[in-house]
Structures are given as C-alpha cells and as structure tokens.
Length: 271
Length: 200
Image (cartoon, rainbow over the protein chains, first blue to last red):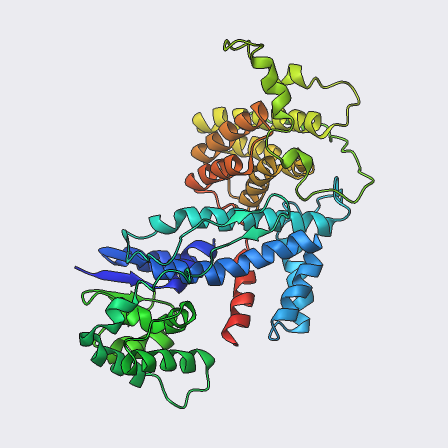
C-alpha cells in the first residue's frame, strides 16, 4: 500500500495557491497514494509560515487601503522583488480585478480604484486564509501525530483592529515538547547521528546550522529538554525522523528533504 | 432562440461619501447592527413570532433613494431575475440564451460590490462571484453553477446583513460547484513572500 507523509509545502500549494499549476500538481500527487498522512507538525509550520505571510499581506491592505502601497511594502521586505517588477505587479493585480476591461471608473464608496482593489484583495485573502484553515484536515486521509504542546487555534480577525490574530503560532513554552520523548530515546541515537551527518558541516545556511546544532544536542545531551525554538529548528529533520517506515515524504522541497530521508533509509518524493 | 434584446437594469446611483471612512470594517459589518431592528419585530413580550416582514417592506425603494441597501436590493433582484431566466434556458438546453442572461447578471457585480458598505459578509460573497466570473474567461456557467449562484443571491437578498462567517459558507458553496472564487494571481503574492523567507 502506498502512503505519503505530507510535508508543509504540499499543504501550502494545495490550499493557498488556488488556480495555479502548483495546486494542480499537489492535488494530483495526493491522489497518487492510497493513503495520505498529515502530521500536525506540518499544520504548525504552515500556520507560522505561509498562513502568516498571507495574514501579513491582509493586514497590510487593512493598514494602507491601497494596492499600490501594499505592493511597495512587499518589495521593501523582498530584495529580489525587482523595481521593474513592482509596477508590473501593481498593473497585473489591478487588471486581475476587472471583470470588463471597459468597466467605467466609478469608485462608489471608495476614494479611488486603488482603494477598491485593495479591499477586494483584502477580502479575498481573508476568505483564503479562513477557508484553507477549515480544509486543512480534509486534504489527506488522516491527520496524525497530534502535539500536546501545540494548540491548533483557528486564525481570526480582530474586530477592533481588523488585523489577523494567529496566536498561538508556536508551541506552548509551559508544556514539554511532545516529540522529544521519542527523539531522546536510546534507540534513536543512530538515526540522529545519520541525520546530522547528512547536513554538510560547511553549509552557510542558517537553517542548516541550527538543525545541526539541535541534532548534536539531542545526540550528546539527550537529557536536556528541547525548547520551542529548537523544535522549530529541527524542521525538515523532524519529517525524516517521524515519517512512518512504510510511507514516503511528499514535498516540493526535495533538495532539503531527500538527503535527510535517504540518510536513514527513507524516501522523499515530489509531486 | 428569439433575438429579443435582454433589458439591462438601470445603473444605480451610488452615494459618494465625503469622509475618509469608506470600506474597512464598516458599521454594517458588525454583527447585529441593522439586523436587530428587523428582529425586534418578531415578538413583543411573548415567545410567539410575528409574521415575517418582507425585506422590500422593511426597506422600501423610494424614488431617488441613494441608500446602499436599497440600491443593493434592486441590483440583487435584477441578478436573481437574470439567473432565474438563465436557469430556465439552461434546463431547456438553450445554452446561448442562458449565457446571455448570465452575462447580464455578471455585469451587475461591480455595482453590487460598490454597495459593500452593507457588510463584509455581503462583500465577500459578491467579491467571490466577481472573481468567479473573471476566472471563467467567458466560458458559460453550467446549470449547477447558475442554480447555486441564484440560490445564494436569493438568500443574500432575503438577509443582506450576513456575518462574515456566513458569507464564507456561501463562498464555500460556490467553490463546491466548481467556481474558482480567488483572484487569479493571488498565489504569486505568496511566492514573492516565500522568496523573501528563503533568503534568510
């Protein structure tokens, strides 16, 4: 029986990229397996990452009430968002709201077409965030590996400010990490060593360095409790470790997941 | 099919507001604001329900009225009528005629969105229908899609002050009949932000 252990990127493509080729690929990939399993760790990462990005964007529309200013804000947090791309993006986003190219410019309640477009995108983002959250556990056959330390609270819009409230985004600091018991078990040591060794020591990426340091700590100081931040740093290694033996990790980030999975005799596949 | 022109509803005159408070979190968005007035008529000291008052009697369309609600009720009535005609035509297999009525309905959506001051629940449904129309790229709606839109529009006209969560339920029903209700390039925005994250 073929089983897929669904990683965060698949959840993102399937639920937050409507109408895109990536969504079609993710959905087709999920349909390939007889059983699909979604760990709650994926939901946690998804809410803290992609959902958080869209919520930021929603809040930016609330703050600026302008499509042009919001695109400006995206470009200021993304250095690769080229200046030339900025004006193209505003035009493309504005054009994407027009039902009819010859639609007369009647802003109605709005101060400008730009404000109306901002409101349209804000509503669309609020809808996308809230409905994708509702669908998260319906995407796969099963949701597995519940986390006692994490409260899976739905995103909500604060009625007073209009901003998204995503709390809690991370695990509770008051509750012991639910994953650490298994990670710290004596029989896990060899697996942890193999995972650590699969990450190049020379890597300059922050996420690699952080992951190596947590794995090193688990190997050499298994009695030490994992902090919420360390659990997050474990990231991709957590998927390799907790993926059931009879399943494959389904991810679009094959570059990072493949070496980790193969180091411990597991497999990672992309859509 | 007859070649009778389909009458397009008159363009509503939408009130221009002078203040800066225009679109975000408007008073009508808050649950219970205007709805309370409607509900009050249901009982007077007893548990017995008074007869339901029709929305048109609650909000009569006085000539020259520029209220958003009255404008929206008129546009919704037009939209419901167009979709009802589209349904009948589709059921009889007259697909071109059906699409002609659907086109007229779609043409009312920008004006309906300009009445979004009614509330976020109302706005999210109209916005979803608007993007669904864009995403069809001119392809006609099928009978199921026409019927679902028609049914939701009727519910919306019966109670336009829907809460946002109720609006989302309607949008889910639109998605359920295969309509793509999201802006066509919204996923690209996420990718731009994901790129920023991957640089860390």
